[in-house]
Length: 411
Image: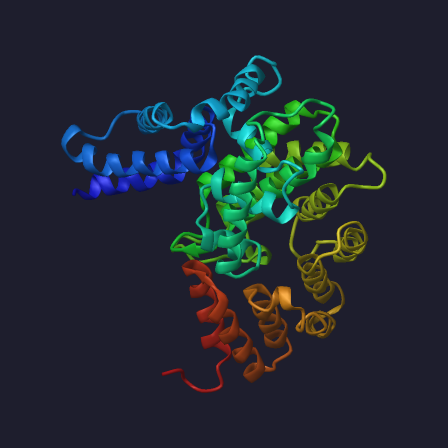
């Protein structure tokens, strides 16, 4: 098989998985069946494209093959009659005029209130976003075996409960929006800094999260959480061109060239932050976007208002307490009050089991220890961070830090 075909199939998996699966679910009426058909389509691409050539529109080719496979299986499957009601509901929803996009419909299916919040998020990241089970488990800070079991239970429950493949009515939206926002945020996070691999960013996931956030904004123009999430994505993504240097090395926020940040995204994001913060009490994504706005508006790293950022994290901790928020607040405290204050705050979180395998806790400790001149302890912290980090760009940065502070040459 040629490298060209392997590259084309891999690229189609990154870019087209969500489109192909979402379109196939509508035909298959069953998530497991749809996933099987999509996997078959990619397998056929590996067999057919070397002789037939890579199609001009790989997504359309994969959709056709997967949907035809689903139709063939359904014709031979006694479940066909049982699935018809849900399929009819799905088809009717396409004419409702709200959002005619299969991906968003699949997101809302995965985020049905009959599923637990953890299952909703995990299932959407796996099916809609195309993340592997390992990537989903790392994004949600649980073991891979736990995540595999959670995904299996969730898919079975969707089938058993005949959960329809639709965007819910306006009356049903509020109970699902928070889970959908969480999923899109985690999707963006997984793309902004890839869990593993040789690239810092998975641009396909970033773009997908931005598209879904914009769709939600059209669907719910008055929702402050949606405005906050879209603002957060735009403001964070505005720094994309400055996160790596010319040699592909990681550049910390403190060293980025701010005049290269995307000013159009910043302007749009700041407007959305203002809209989002009008809600009382403020939504968590509005507060997170407000933190990103402080960074976006600071002309230099030194001019960053860290006291304001700590204050925003204090409010966010009340609105949405989580170990990750606590860690981010601890880091901000270190920049506001000095490295010892940051180190003390981080060390208070060291026994939290949720953060036990989280590399950013160790790397943040290492940074503050390095600033304090405690080189031996900093080296141990960076070694620990390397143990948990699978992104090669981040690993290269951590290795540089480790070499910088290591008391003796490393063999």
